[in-house]
Length: 505
Image 1 (cartoon, one colour):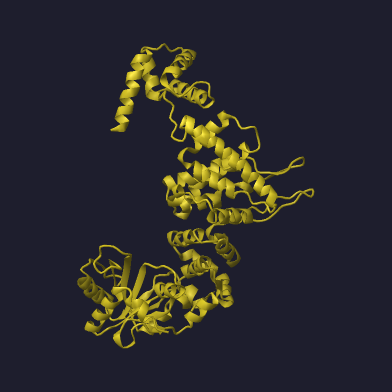
Image 2 (cartoon, one colour; image 1 turned 180 degrees about the vertical axis):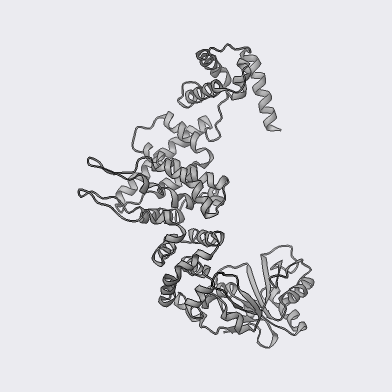
């Protein structure tokens, strides 16, 4: 098979071919770009292997394209970025990595290889899977010709993940390849060839030598797959999930007492994850939070095993699992080497609040309850509502539709209340600073209690959230603590306006 016409559409390949010819080296595009080219999937990463110095070839191509080249001499690699448009005024950004052909050998206690110069055949032998071992020549005599020693093209057509060499050796050498096999299967909706999968089962304990960061990077790609449950089921049956995410495994199973059982929370969680992945109403607001919304789906019921109780009257209960789960989130993120920043706090908030909208659909909805949800969810309300909709996993279609209609009703009321009260960015007009100024007191328990009382009154609709109407309540709450105001309303109004002006600068 020849891809010369397709490669000529991108000037970068002609530039590489010319410079390889000048240097008298063999050069090939190899790996994921070739796989995606056959599958007609978009790809911006190009790996080029040459029999010789990849760095020298990269520098020559970079000079021709007038673009900077990043060199990594300890790895024998170099990288440049360019665009599809030779004038670089517009077009697709491309990242091109150059490396010399090499062969590798491994020690049992490490996945870091001992590297030597090698041939193209050596380089293809070291590849993880047959579909990633295909190369395309960039040399003039056979430009565009596919080099496929392990029938990767056939495996692509059969939708099969298979190692080019003995899978036990492949996975023992680099155990991360076990995660990659499952990740590719999930991303491409491929099967893993039986001997290859059996090897993962045999070798799964080798994953323990891989750094948590690398494992989590692959896990995140599975989480972001079109149907992530497929990847997690493969991880489970391969014995990998128990090693890398035991908290999720703990959800599995159904216990029955007196004829009363509960749903299998492992498979329920995976269904919620799929529902999030395949939701039709994908809000642009959530696009940057997609990974973390899916993590919230994974963790929303994570504390159910720890809170599971049997009640003879009502059956199985999981009271407080949302609060306990929220408390677990930082520890899980820390173990997984996930970021302990606003992404973690987003997941934690959704886990803690995921039952609240559901409760609102089952009772008479009060403005007070809606205000509290808006206040607690803030700008993450869209993510919370997406998670709650995904959490409906009944096989009874009518029951699902009934719950969704109830959510529609709650959302309409939330939008109406938000329009009136602007509660997503709600901050009580009576701040701690104003309380201290009004009574001339330092930071103290009294300040916190007064602030909380005023906030609760605003959320309950007792007083509007404006200074004029909240001031009498401030005075009243102060009296409960034996405090007398030293400033009147007009003086506090000036202070409040000054504070707002400072915030806007």
